[in-house]
Amino acid sequence: MKGFKISDIKELQIKAVHIRKHIIEMLYKAKSGHPGGSLSAVDAIVALYFNHMNHDPDNPKDPNRDRFILSKGHAAPALYATLAESGYFDVKELLNLRSMNCMLQGHPVCTYIPGVEASTGSLGHGLSFANGVALAGKLDKKKYKIYVMLGDGETGEGQVWEAAAVASHYKLDNITAMIDRNFLQIDGNTEQVLKLESIKDRWSSFGWKVFEVNGHNIQEILETLNQADSHKRQPSLIILNTIKGKGVSFMENNVDFHGVPPNEMERNKAIEELNLAKNKLEASL
Amino acid sequence: MSKKMVNPRNAYGETLIELGRKNKNIVVLDADLSKSTKTIMFAKKYPDRFFEMGIAEANMITTAAGFASCGKIPFVSTFAVFATGRVYDQIRMDIAYSKANVKIFATHGGISVGKDGVSHQMIEDIALMRVLPNMTVLAPSDATQTGKIVKLMAENKGPMYARVGRADAPLIYDKAELEDIKIGKGIVLREGEDLTIFATGTMVEPALEAHKNLKKSGISARIVDMHTIKPIDEKLILKSAKDTNAIITAEEHSVLGGLGGAIAEIIAEKNLKINFYRMGIRDRFCESGEPDDLLEKYKLNKKYIVKKAKELTKN
Image (cartoon, rainbow over the protein chains, first blue to last red):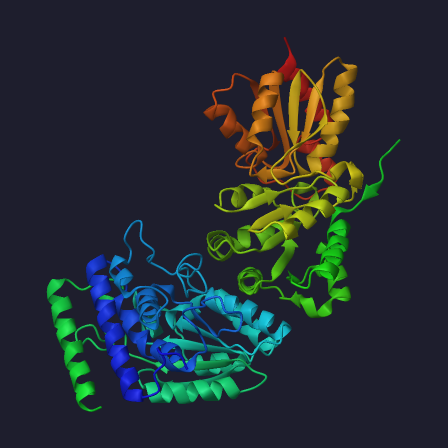
């Protein structure tokens, strides 16, 4: 296992706090971006990159690598911070988020950000991209896995259901999709904007194996990822029950922080809270 | 002597098989139209590398980008109308912006699709694809050229879109004549001094026929096959503007944004003093009908090329 890999759950939790701090600093500096959906997605992304996935920051195009596709591209800060912390590029680059003549675009682009698999930001594409990678993997008898993270509101896109049908039709058991189920989208509660429930029944009826976990419990996420990996002849979906804005008290379940960055006071308060959480975790090591 | 009729779609299917035999990375995707697009020929020969995606084009396009990210060379086929307008965002993000090595090969371009009517007559595809950065746009004129273009698509990296019509087409070329064909280089089929007719796809043959009629009337027309609309052969356009006094563009496509649009942009920007006419669908939807009747009603055949050429070269 490479140096950046972490096996201890507490240390993974500390890493997640660290990523959350990056997100706050990045968005504060950029004066724009999406805190809520970045913070809710962090724990699963940390579990994947620092423990579960087979990947090599020194060889981002390794044909045998596991892939992570951030279909909800607006959570880019969570992905960028994770990639930087894994060693794909310099951590200093993070503070150039959304700046002209810099690498880190508002939404992920695969052509020049090391470690980014697909250009996302227009919702609904990620699972289709995964289908292509998964079919190519089956064709070449490769063992790699593909993990895709979708927003819950994102599943309103028709393309998601085209992709869900195709993944099931081709029995793409090398795909594990995850839905960041935080119940909030820009215009409000997902059930009021465009009803999604029952997510479980919808995906089951499309021929998917559905799991459901606490999306902030890294131990549980890792166990479920292992179950999903070993499930055969069906693609797997993990519903990550999450809290939008997780980790920063005043952002939690607050739809106003979907696409609005913290101001100076909010940033200071957020960092203070996250430092407290980090200290608490470190003390218990 | 009348020319042999061959369907460019068949040339596509045959060439895919040839490519598939030589290159294991060629994969083909279709959206329930493989019998029409002729990808079925590849499907029968290499079933493990053919992927039926069902009536779900958006997913198909992005899936092709996923394939390309693994080093595959995906050819994606459906009718031109579904291969572009229906999936514009997917092409924009996952193929053009991502510089994915995906080859979209669309059939049933233009109004000569016939009786299916507007829902199936794509006259905006070239414009839609042309405005996308990184995208190459191609429209071969006969079966021989189609085969050659399909090979070039596989050999050259990057996002590409090609369209052919539905109908059988007269053979313009034999293989030897296309030895040196290059993406982005127009082919001068007939030399001429009075005007230049830049034609693409299905309009190249009528332009050649018009050449004969014009000759009888004492008008010398240069005929150029513009199989590539993007990158446009600016050098050849500038040369023709210098050599001849008029330019006509001919395409089975809207006059907005296609070949005519591309050449108009160059003429305007270079401040060329030249008589100019864009022959194409003049910013309207058409209707159901027999292909030849439609081409007559919407003024896209030899007769109208001759008429316009005479008008433009008067005095």
